[in-house]
Length: 106
Length: 483
Image (cartoon, rainbow over all chains, first blue to last red; front, side, top):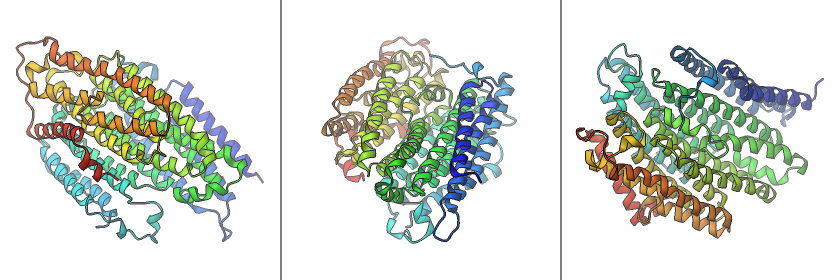
């Protein structure tokens, strides 16, 4: 059976992959996917922590799992708004590459 | 009156406005602004009768929600900002209409007036949040609303570009925030700030790195919100591209709420002296970097909104200086006083910018050339707000900086104080550049007609001008009001 450390390792990997994707990739959609990956890394470690901090009644700590549901909901809302913005950008500029977002300079 | 009702009534107000929008038909949507404005002022009046004693401390929500004086103050602050932003949005309506693919007149205007009210509700919840779950959810309510508002002008490349940048970096900071919360939870087993503070002293030393890692991630996320260096790079682009009222909202309300959350989180961790020793130098470095970057990078700017963005980074630096010296007895009041002064002068600057940019067709400083000839009153108001932002004596901005520096001197942060004074001096240069353009440059078009200002905006400008001088000359009544 995997230990808490294993879960945290996987979640740390997910977070790092997500962060690397945001920093290195140039396509907005892939950046957005990577951002979701970062949120899911947090979800995974929250669930793992909840499972391993058993309360006095022998049940997992449900507070953390409630936060996971909130994160999933917020991520869904963020995707809805975010994709709409990216679609609007694509309609206007026919591009989803971050290099093309350089209209404002001083 | 139970303080819980305040946020509920703001949300109800927003829903009512959506209904009015949906059923009022085509045409100008001025009535929405008027209803929203009066509603917000009504709720603002109600905050003075909010009684925290009515909160049931045994109820489940007591773990999430507090209505201490700081929270109530920030609620009033947010309501006032939102009301002024609505006035600004009314002046900004022609640009919004031009920026949208309009099927009919006034399409999309109603939402532009209503969305700030939902963001306001989120900020008010943020002010009361004493639990990481609550902090996260209310912060996201604000951020997602602001994504929409920043990229609102779908036909304007700059607005969409700003919206995309804000979206990616905002979502990135959300990722940092939740991952940081996760680690703090993993170490302490708690989300509630007060319980965490109670548990921290008894914790095993071996868990300290994990705890600091979590705190660091949360600090990065909040650094994004308050635009502290080195997490400030989104600010200039977003402020320049966003609709001006939204930029004002970002600069004032969103930043103030970020600071309140930062104060609450930091106070939680400062209960352990060992943690305080590790966190303070980090904060001091961030403070110094923010003051230097904000003020020096503002010097070559030619666009007024961009200049205000850099200036808002600089002001975040001075506010952080207050947070670094939080152990000084007067520091809490100094920070809150600075926030009030910052609200008044920044909103005034953005309001005048909205009006003038509308009339001259751009928000470059060159568009303000010879403004004194065309609109002496507007030029005077902008001059006053620039002088106050720079920190000239007898204005609100001067006293704000003075109090903060006093606290820093008391705590003996000499290097930061010296840096602060140097950057204030640098600030004078670029603020005076705007004044020079208005009073000494020739107008590009000498025959341009006088700029017309709507009634509500005129009244708001006069009120904000009066407040700057009043707070600067006679701050005693305000100081006695602050928590």
